[in-house]
Image 1 (cartoon, rainbow, N blue to C red):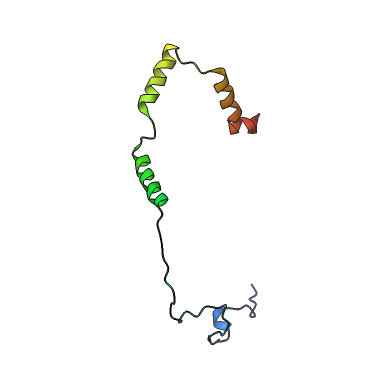
Image 2: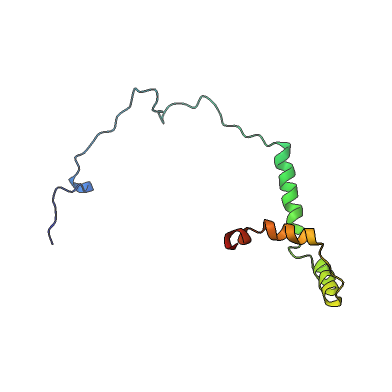
Length: 99
């Protein structure tokens, strides 16, 4: 195996001194801070947080609705209007891929 000695490894690099830049586009980390960051929460942010808390308390599966639908299907009384069924089929993204 051949090793190329011209590769730049940290031990092969020349020592460089770091100095201050007089370029105004480069910030000086030692410069004093002239302004302060501020954060302001809007009313919408508070409302969103409250809604998240309320949403977290709602069960993911509404068991009473599932039980009601299950009973309707088993008794044969569950009917879906034709237009609702066709809208659901037409809006299904998988149907667009396969169809």
